[in-house]
Length: 101
Image (cartoon, rainbow, N blue to C red; front, side, top):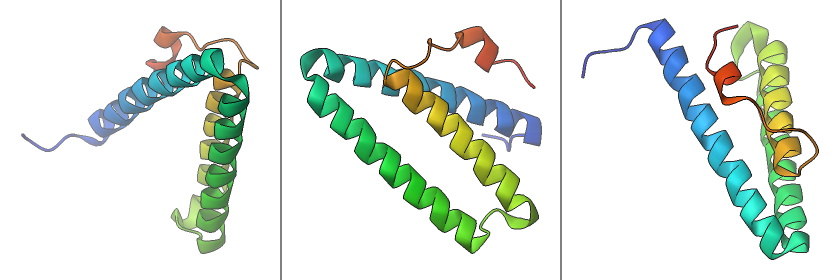
């Protein structure tokens, strides 16, 4: 397979994120219907781990000169997915996630 251009790499990342987002929210919904308390606990633990990972990346300045902005943007995206998985926000429109911004 030939190497991907930067734009194609970004498109692949968006697609992979959307597929993982959809699968994560579906899994959370299935668990919530089966056991609400377990679902809530799982999402709390996942959120704690994400916060810890982002905090380490922030402390290490792991994303270069724009670390603050990159890590903040990643955190906002992850927070939106967790909110949707918890049922706190409406599901994203699948077509809006595939358009470039």
